[in-house]
Length: 159
Image (tube, rainbow, N blue to C red):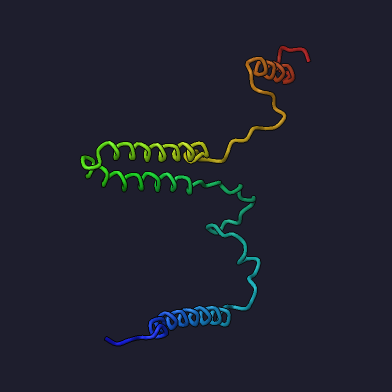
């Protein structure tokens, strides 16, 4: 048997790390050297959509909560991955296995409730209450309608 020193064992890893570092440096330097040097014009910076010049500002960005939906998918995907082997060996693990899967399902359900409470399945912008508005009751609605009709100057009413 041939004895190898620790340096000989780590030499391929060191060479690979050095090649990776050289490739990174080469990529960054060549990109800096070959990139165009002139600044873009105002026309290139403006948005373009089918030749139409935009005449208003775009609306606020829509808050996408995809990460919450992906967390739900991962949670239930992991649950299925663990439930299949459990179902295969259910008779061998008996009561202990049943208790463990009930605990596991409870944890998954609690995490699902947490995601739902954070609005995982609520699509669209968050609804905010306007400050200073009184709570809406039937009396407040009637008073608003009455005030709107009396101030509108409809025909047949004395102004």
